[in-house]
Length: 339
Image 1 (cartoon, rainbow, N blue to C red):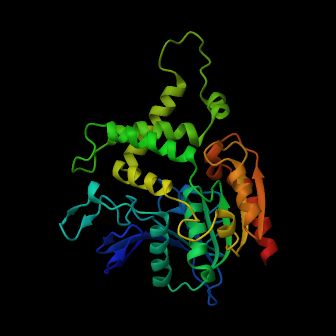
Image 2 (image 1 turned 120 degrees about the vertical axis):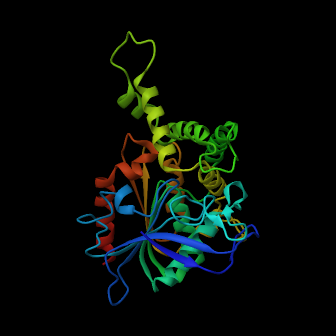
Image 3 (image 1 turned 45 degrees about the vertical axis):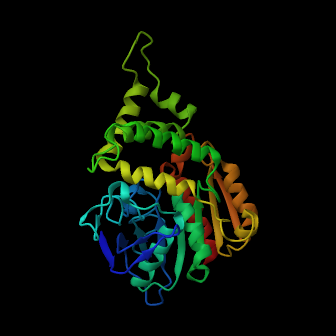
């Protein structure tokens, strides 16, 4: 992982200004002489810049996005806790961590940070910009913000706006964090129990009834407690608490709520999507209840040069990471048509 330090004020969409900016990022492979092999991966809510780790099977040696062929970049998003400026960062004006004083950020703010890094790395053209879920939010915004810098686009399990269902889910998750008696204490551990509960809610939307029953049902009909499904949910909550932070989770769910590509652009979503001129592959996951496939079909209908593919999967929203073989197959087939 590398770090780009930007020692200048960084204005945010809401009018606040960060006095400086750090961006943690990871690269794989080398940019060719023509600069024509850049693939930029935008990550989702709690991921980091190591795309070859969390998207193994799609990104990495021997995979469809291969450092032997591509110069791959993934940057940790603004507001996260994996190296890019966020609530755990030191505020240079106070010399203390921001914690709950960190300003609200939007997807567009994240994209502006990505654009700074793009220029710092000397990248003039991104051959393929790709992202699933919240990563797709960033990718669409970036195509609208810097249309000349991006050639092709891959979107998975994502949407043009955050839905009422998504906002309601995030609000319930934040209520869990806010109910933790340690929330907003000036420590990195504040809200940890609430974060565990928030993750439990999230898991119910990342998966679905069918996969939970299929994978987490108990064969023992005599049980009165300690069910397999309960153990699984507790495990997932503990795992997130061990690697993430409640301040960042609270903040980033707010940034997803404000995602709306038509905001401030003088039109409705179809007209704004029509401005995305990149050749675009859109992949939906059949069982996704967080970003249902009709949202991807809406994108495909309104982005001028778009191909829609639906992957049959029991894994719900998480299918955009789990179904790496199917994703890779469709992506390689589509990339071959661009050559």
